[in-house]
Image 1 (tube, rainbow, N blue to C red):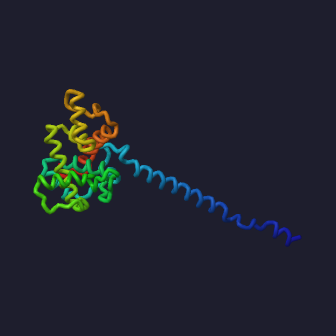
Image 2 (image 1 turned 90 degrees about the vertical axis):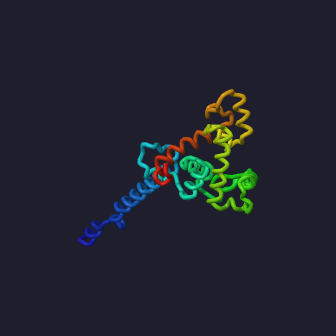
Length: 216
């Protein structure tokens, strides 16, 4: 009887490990939720970031590369370097390998035909279209084109950006229809209207986050 009583008081096998096991599972679940939450926050920073927030948060969602090339090309073409950075982010997210279905190349999504025209007019006799794969040249040619559009549209940043996205011919037609300087809300192409609004918003963001680096 004593032996049976002792056996009946023995803990069930594995019982001592149940509570710690549950705690481990709960901890892993909490960590997984935190990781997913942080990843979602990081991926969506461009949607919710505001310039009154710490710039350190902005750097997580808005990259900046080729700073010296941006500053040099912007200065050479009398452009705001924050605007150039905003165009690059909108066009390629600073991914030099991006190629569009229409054939635009690189950081500023420069069309090879446009680059060849720029090279001809600017004296770039050694330029070949494969040079657009070089960030410095891509940024320089993109800035040259922005300057030409800005001159063509008499300093209207909305018209300049709209032309960069949709072509100068379309912008001329829209101006003729409107009868006045184009505003973002006047742009009939939804994609182009969103593009212009996004670049202008990002210009403010890049000034806030990287103003010192960009020279703003």
